[in-house]
Image (cartoon, rainbow, N blue to C red; front, side):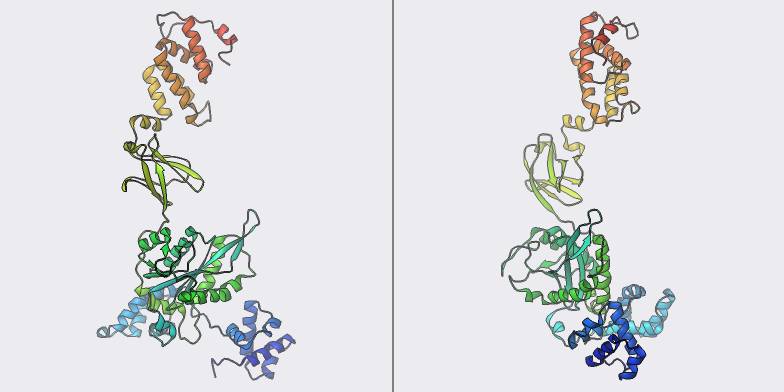
Amino acid sequence: MAGTVKQMSIIKQVLLLKQRGESNRGIARKLPINKETVNGYMQTVKANGWRIGDLLEVDDPELERMFHAGSPAYTDERMAEFLRLLPYFREQLEDRKSHVTRQLLWEEYRQTHPDGYGKSQFYEHLKQNLVAQKDIATVLAASYKPGEKLMVDFAGDKLSYIDTDTGEIVKVEVFVGCMPYSDYIYVICVPSQRTEDFLFAIRMCLEQLGGVPPILTTDNLKAAVITPDRHEPDINTALRDMGNHYHFTVLPCDPASPTQKALVEDAVRITYNRIVAKLRKREFYSLLELNKAVWELCGQLNQTRMQKRPYTREERFHAMEKPLLQPLPENIFEMRYYADLKVQPNGFVELRHAGVTHHYSAPYIHIGRKAKVVFTRSNVKIYIDGKPVASHRRKHTYGYTYEDEHLASKARVILTRSAATYVSRAERRSPDCGAYISEIFNKDRTSQPEEVYYRLCEAVLASYHKYESHLVDLTCRLCLEYRVFSYKRFEAILKHNRITQPDDEPSLFAPVPTDHANMRGNGYFK
């Protein structure tokens, strides 16, 4: 009879004869089975890399699972488009007044998708999804409501990849999520069980589901629960923030009661058998490469017919659960961090995180006050007495981020300075000063950042408040001529000029009555 599972004693006889060197045709002649059946068994053994000697030691029930775990329901790329159209097909067939038939739906489908499924495949996939929509009297259907819960857990065993820079084997955590009604499974590897990685794994799981169930069930790991309690557990603030963003409620298991998420515990076992075991001999050289292999096997798992059920996990999920999920929010969730900081005298708060220090401005009227800073990977918000006073884009390098209206006038001058502003200020003083300051920032003269010369320029401009203007102008001309760009030497020349020059200011174009040779001998221009 077609589709009948052979007794395990016969399969073991097949394996035993093959181990002895018998051909597939010879095995079929000696045993009451078809040659194609023997070919199929041998192909399964080869595809999975099994050793016949090891298989002969396996118990019959386990051997049955290994050879008859089910077959992929579909692997065709056209299925993604078919699943997108499935709600429309279902709606049209359920509307009795429209008198729509499967034939009409297929004809319309082929008009818009000429490379899509033929009639027989279209009918078969439509049938399977409609069958998956019907309730079957099982414990799962009686215990869980469709689309109500997402159960999550970390597997005990880890996977790994090789760091290409150091050659080190990096162990990673295996996160498993499960929709208990359909038994739909999602798996991803993350660096650790820390809160950031845990929330990232949940976000990726929700994006794969394409919606949000109203309840998230976790165990009592620190990334989810700060203080376990049977009646009022203290939920991690970051996870609560995520629940508020995606509109789900966190209901952790009672302490030491993993039976409240038994389906995801079973999903972990299935992950070991169907994913981890198949990757045990493969090497990966990045976390992304490892995850791509995990997702490929996870997709095959969800698209494989379930034993004792006429549908796959994916068919059941799309038919019964996905239409009931809440839509994903427009913006992805970013973990929030909190810090209590003081507004410094310069009008900035100093935020240090992940080894990076950056300064963000607050209105200067709040200088000296304590601020609550709430920040994510992309934004920083500053609160004073519970009221928002500033918001900035997050920067991940050292520096200052500010808004002009936040700054006092003196701070604004300092933060807005540049080579152009110094040249402009110098030219307003005199042409000699302007020429000297311009040469200081000349890119053909130096490759240093312009900030290096800000203090020199400030000192030169401040000299006009302490010395006569004609003496400073004379010093600028001399320093420009003899290529002096140090304030100590500039000041030394300036003081020498004050001693040797007459009180009345000479013409800017008149010869300079100064003993240059004597100044050079005393080291002014070195």
